[in-house]
Length: 92
View 1 (spheres, one colour):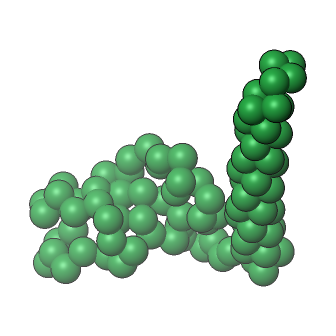
View 2 (cartoon, helix red, strand yellow):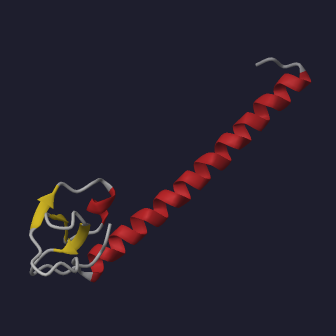
């Protein structure tokens, strides 16, 4: 996957459906060159990603990372509490 046009003398691009992760990059289109079969993710004609769109994507990714880390930590604490109860003979 390239992020720039291919080096063919006369490229012929075919538009492809974007994968889920490609949709996180607003204003891009997925193409395949019919000549060299290279896959490219290029900026669509006349589109520009605004700062607010990019900021929104970055904040979303960071929030997702924080929530996943918090969830994993919380799950570990629950498992530790269950294990401790089992050792103490509480058997819940």
